[in-house]
Length: 124
Image (tube, rainbow, N blue to C red; front, side, top):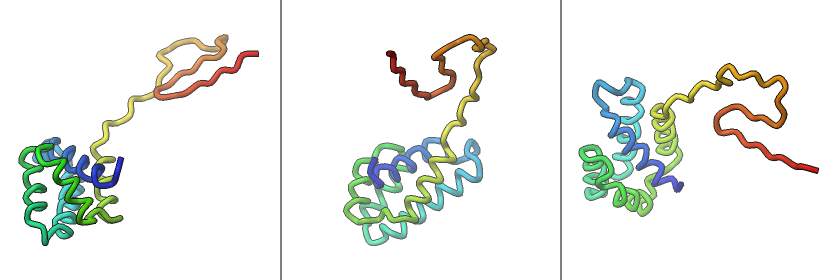
């Protein structure tokens, strides 16, 4: 995913979480920091600032146009990326605990337990 799309994804995800009472203070602070960083970088582009505001009112509505503006203006720098990544980490759902579910695997061969694991078997 390109940086501008990642930043807009973070904004959309943050805005859809309902930055009111449902979001934690850390999420609200991270969202605000990202939005302020972008606002300062887009200060000379009223159309881009309006798209940023529209995104908060209707998440996803101006996403494509805002991605384009971020690319054209070069507004996505290291600081903006750090804010976006922090927000996405805070909004990520907690990982499900790994559990074998009480299965006895002592005599098993070629068994794999866990979420998102990979197994490669070579038979001779």
